[in-house]
Structure formats: structure tokens, C-alpha cells
Length: 228
Image (cartoon, rainbow, N blue to C red):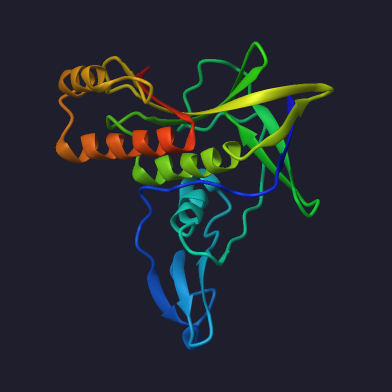
């Protein structure tokens, strides 16, 4: 399945970005700077994130991009798309991966892959999946990696498959073999309390889920946490 979309601007509010280490421009060396940081001089400042490994699933480059988004000027480089590979940190309920071709306002093309696509009436559910076998939640790096996709999907315009036009609803799905039950950002306080208690989540885990849900609601996408 090949999905085509346009992005003419980014509107998104982030909640869980990490602090950026400041590097003086006089000491700038792309080979030695941290994987994401803030470059400063008297005249300018900009955030930079860099690819540190050819394997996206091992080095979380999208997490580093996410961490730079609060800065007005930012630089990053992102290569590769895949279509047929299911990564170890994905647990998919359907076999429907899709390539996504994004056209920006200058006419440039960018290529991504969405883990799952479900068509409901005239709406595409664009699902990015993150899975953990050893803990109740995927790592923060994995989650931010997924959030970067949400930023793009939330700003899609003119979405089509062939000659058919669609609306979109982005979904970030977090799964684990260590969880019991299911919780969605569309659920209320009572459902959250039951899920937290059933899984004996600690304070840090609860706060992360609350911040993620707040980010999802504010930017109009769904976060789904469930057992597999």
C-alpha cells in the first residue's frame, strides 16, 4: 500500500523533550558533538541531531529529532525506508505495512513507513507500534521515536491512496507481554486508575503515561497501551 500526503507546516506541542547540552560554535565538530545538542555563538544558535548508526531501530534517531523540536532553528539528517520488515520491537495485529511519501511545500519528497494501516470508512488509522518484551512500557527512546512519526502524521494534508482521498487519525500503540489489559488516551480517570492498579505501575510510569496522553489529546492523536 502506498500513501501520499502533503505537509505545508508543522503545528505540534511536545511534552517530554530532554534538555539539550550547549556546545560553543567555535568547538563544533560533527564527529565529536553529542547526538543531539544546542550549538551557540554570539550571532546565532541552532539545535542539531545526528544519525549515529545505519540501524534506525538500534539508535533512535527520531528520538533525537524529537528532542530538538522546541528550538526554532534545527538541523538533522534522516535516510532509509522499509516496507516488508517487521522489527523486533514491533508487535503488529495486522500485516498491513504501508509506504508513506510526503511532499513538502517546496516540492521535496520524503519517505517513511507506517507499521500498520487500518481503513475505517473514509479514515486511515496510521499506526506506529512500539513493543517491549522485558518491561511494562517500551523505553523512552522508543516512545519518542514513535512520537516523531505522530508529529508528521498529525500535519498531513491531501492524503490519498491512488485516486481515493482520505482523512487520517494517527495512533501510537505501546505493547508489552508484561501488561494486563488495555488503556487508551480516550479513556477517563476511572479506567486509568483501574489499569494502573492492575499493573502495579510505579509513580514514574504513571507520570509518563499521563504526559503522553496529554500530548496525544492536545495534538489530536490516539495513544493505545495494551498487552500482547
